[in-house]
Image (cartoon, rainbow, N blue to C red):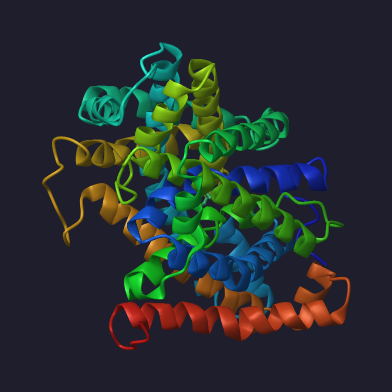
Length: 456
Ligand code: PHE
């Protein structure tokens, strides 16, 4: 039995609504913006293989665990962790996991919104035709012009934060379910068009080779950590987003099947983004390790040279913003749900305060691309540091704790009945993965980075 029959925040209308919302959360800037640039910075192939391994061996089992915990607890991650732990006769300190998730979501959203703001700005740039016939230098200077202007970045960041808080304040079910239903498939089709363009760019082979030919000598302990961190980031794991979505899931849905669909869709989108981008990078003698501006400096070249490019470009950036939008709402939902549950606040009020705080924090990222670009902490700009801290440290640690909680702290009788797997073998396999494989893998990767273990 779940602790509550239904969450006070409502419930998805069906299993498909949950799949769409969870896919909406997973597929975002992580797939289209971040995956290509970190794959580029970490040498391609070998990095991609490690990332794929992490998705299968760590990501999917943890996603199953997170949805299961959420549906069992039916409250915000903080209260869910607390009440399940108490119910199992364990320490209420487990709620710390909920708190660290809220903090991670807040920090991620603060920069996520700034990058989504770039996407917003690019909708209008491509709509106005400035990419027509653009060269690689031209595309770079358009990009640098944007990130060099704090005023524009603040304006777009503000618009995106408003969009996010508007949806969250209406509750997860209103509007959103419908939006994802149409936008996700359209995004997919457009990616196919872009891959088609890349195939004819003259450097498709080179792009494919870069993405899939594994040369393990190129990989360092730190790139393994980045690949693992990205597996958490791209699947929205380790901070309660998927847990809170799970808490709105109807009782009779198969969690494991759902997790496979979500993880599969997410991976396909990331690989397609890579296949669309790298051939263009090589065909135009661009640098695969160009960093966060990569897609903003490569795709405009493709759009600038294809028939109907202004139209496709505008559409692409609209879809990118939508993908980011359906992710950003899940980043802040755990915090909002907690405020509503514990502080007796209305959803609107909770949204206002969390949105304002996140907006303010986002200014750090805005300035890290211009007036603070020389301010470094541990050799990283404010944005890089925030990204490293959240994706590579907070999310994997959160995921590790979720695995330990689901496999060691929760009772097997409870987890078995909540998951209701098709057979005992699948259940045992899942439990083995979250009990041993996931925690050990995360710990090894950490030890390897701090130099206590050396296998790379
Ligand atoms: N998965 C999202 C993306 O790839 C980002 C995200 C991370 C969303 C963590 C929610 C929680 O863009």
